[in-house]
Amino acid sequence: MMILLMLIVSLLQAHVIQQPNLASAVQQLCPSGASVSDYQWQEDEAFILDMIASPTAYEPLQITTEGIRQFDLGLTTLPATVSGGPISPNNRYIMLSSDAISGDEAYIYDLVEQTVVRSFNFPPNWISWSGWTSSDRFAYLTYSETVGQLQIKVMNIEGREERVFSLDFLGFSSEVVRAIADNSSDDVFVWSSINQRSDVFLYVFDAHSESQTRLILVNMDSQRVIYDSALVTGSIIAPPGLEIFEESGRIPFWATNGTGVILAMADHHLYLLGVDGQITLLAEVAGTAHYGTISFDGRYVAYFEIAPYPERRYELIVVDLENGGRFRLEGFSTPILWSREGHKLAFARGLRGVAIDIVDIDLCMLGQVREPFGRYNPTYLNAWFNRVPNSDL
Image (cartoon, rainbow, N blue to C red):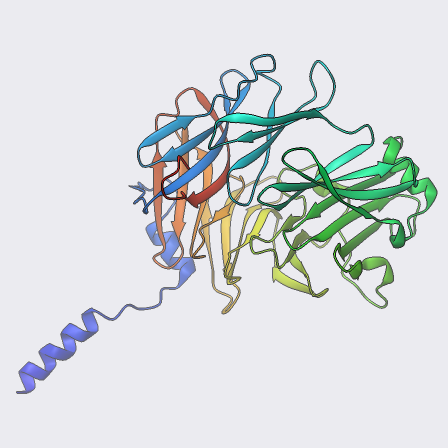
């Protein structure tokens, strides 16, 4: 009887899954140069990979378990000057732009119908894209000559203007507004980004102001200022300088779930400026953080850390925000995408050509999509999703 009991206990112990130490687990399972397994595809799964085809022409690719699908953009007159932009939340439309031949031009390309839905010239006082507000509407920052103010305009994919949001209540001086509109001074700069809840994030740099950098979060629907660093009293974390716009992947990003903007502040650590107006420390960074992103369920933050000179070592770091656990994986700094369930992430990198690496956080395993990418130069993943049933996507 005792022998049988010991055998049962032994079998139970053999099936107990110990929570791994994430740092050591990844170092053991996924060391630098280790062989990796082919990725196990999920049902109806697909990637959109933005590529630069040889020598310089841009073309997005759809990667599925069936292979590669190339999109014919139909822009034969501008084969080497079109650059990829943001993809819509439903992964159907991609924004393309070009500054060749006839001035600034934009294109909305339908990935399902494989056709350009609309092409148009940027408005004369267009400043920058702000992003998609829904699956078929996008926003941009512009200047209105009529009212002399900065505005966020929302358009649908047919090109109809649906909404105008004036920023005059934020108190920008006329000198700053004019300098931004004319792009006439290196001393003034503004950058905008929007989420699907109509929260607008603004980064404003004015070399002549006392603080120089101003961070603003405002809701378009209520016109409520959620956060304004110019109004915060007492000790605050120093906002980042213009250098974040000069290095790839350091521009402020909206979190995947839209709960806030991920900021690499002046102290180089990663913070979340939440839609509740609170600033939360996400990760302490030894070097510089690039492409910071939060999983859909809000549990993990992932980013690439570049070690200070002279090391310049690139590592993917994932931090568990619930228990502080983290792991490192040697990698190449490109945009990171999270799966919808929140426990897998993917990024593209050059590895004997091009590959898509997928890290399973729970299992601490690394899979890889290897396709015949021979004639392509590595760029980045634009989307990772499950295709809609009975559609090409």
